[in-house]
Amino acid sequence: MLKIHSRCTLACDYCYMYELADQTWRLRPRRMPLAIAEQAAARIAEHIHAHGLTRITLILHGGEPLLAGPNLITQVVTSVRDEAGPRVRVDVSLQTNGVGLDDGYLRLFDDLNIRVGVSLDGDAAAHDRHRRYRNGQGSHAVVMAALKRLTAGSYRHVFGGLLCTIDVRNDPVATYEALLDVNPPMVDLLLPHGTWTTPPPQRIPDSPSTPYADWLIAVFDRWFTAPRQETRIRLFEEIMHLLLGGASTTEAVGLSPVSVIVIETDGSIEQSDTLKSAYHGAPWTGLHVSRDSLDAALLRPSVVARQIGAKALSPECRECRIRQVCGGGLYPHRYRSGNGFANPSVYCPDLFRLITHIRQAMVAGIAARVARWQ
Ligand code: SF4
Image (cartoon, rainbow, N blue to C red; front, top):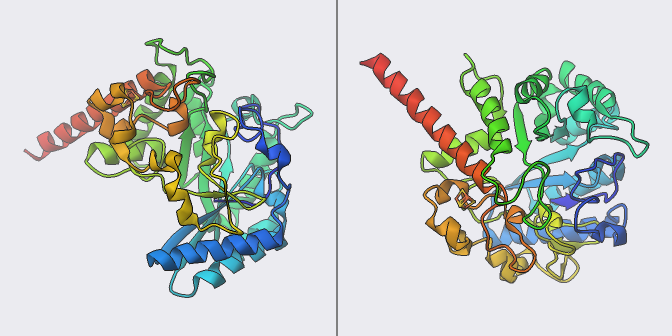
């Protein structure tokens, strides 16, 4: 993941870059200098060749990556592909807030074969609760106009999907149906970041209440019982895949080793940026693209902890009957000031209820199918 710009056009109040514990963005260059981008490309290529990789994913991220401008985006993507060489497939995606996604960018993404993910939290009321400009004005109308440009014309194939951060005060089914209105190929439903020390909204630590599971189950039931699949929902598909014995491909659930490394605008090599929600400096590794390989990050204790699966879980999670599926949830959500990450997720009751519900729905669905065959 390359952080090509460290500032944003919006001021969303739940943003882990600016509004939560880590504040290192204040010290970083706004835009990744070209020299750093070239060093990053060389380090990525070094990693590809050292491990004989034939395919990687490059995520252009921010802040708001469109603020980096079309020239830097072109130079970064071209450098990484050139350094990787013709035998390596470099899939490139970019995650944007949608503000600034104009026809010029859509042409560029088509030319460079970049997939675009857009953040949308539901209908106007749901989206504008949080996703606002600094002056307090909501961004929904502007984002919907951008999504119309992206989905209505000849650029539809560059649409990667929607990213929606959950607010349990929004109606779950209405939120899901508002997302369906733009016909996304994939939806990512994200739990708002929080820890035991700084709990997420409406999540009371140690309470058995399950506001997030209740919300997600309403969406799951609407999605799972639809007569045809209307879109893919990554969280539900990951849980179903894990329940069937597969391995996870995201950090949200499961016990797969972390496989994302971040390069910041100043060239620092860091761990997953969601750790910014835990404490100031949490993603820090002390490594830099000018002198260190990406593999050097694998020797950092905090990275090792995220490579060893169940051995790094808390005693409660190790005893839990759904640990292979839940995996203790997203790593930052386990943090508690004083004892670090050796805790269940702050979302533990929600995760347990959601996973149990999905399992029951799958069992009932399979049983119904079998009964029809007999
Ligand atoms: S449901 Fe709770 S105890 Fe079980 S693995 Fe997940 S976080 Fe740990």
